[in-house]
Length: 125
Image 1 (cartoon, rainbow, N blue to C red):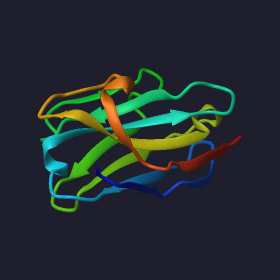
Image 2 (cartoon, one colour):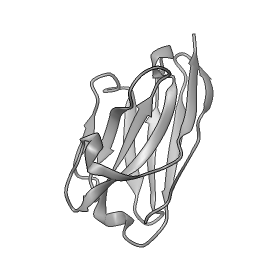
Image 3 (tube, one colour):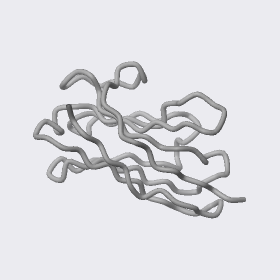
């Protein structure tokens, strides 16, 4: 089972930036879609962004398009989420996750089977 460890969360003022990182264990990182999800207080966890194993395919939730950028470095077994122009509604626990199937681009939450512990992002107004 792959282990995922997120970092980079914190407190930021609205309009500011944060970069989240997610480091993965193991040797198969480059074979899988990686995704970012978030869960705000009192709400269900939702999709934020996903990137295919090669980085060729990327998808974002409408709420973050144009503000967030997902990327990956397969040599470092790490996926990133650059968060720019943050809004108070971006406040949530952010989780990274690995897709179920190798070399298949996935974006549905149920298709991700390995999850990190989450990192808190708080955007103040």
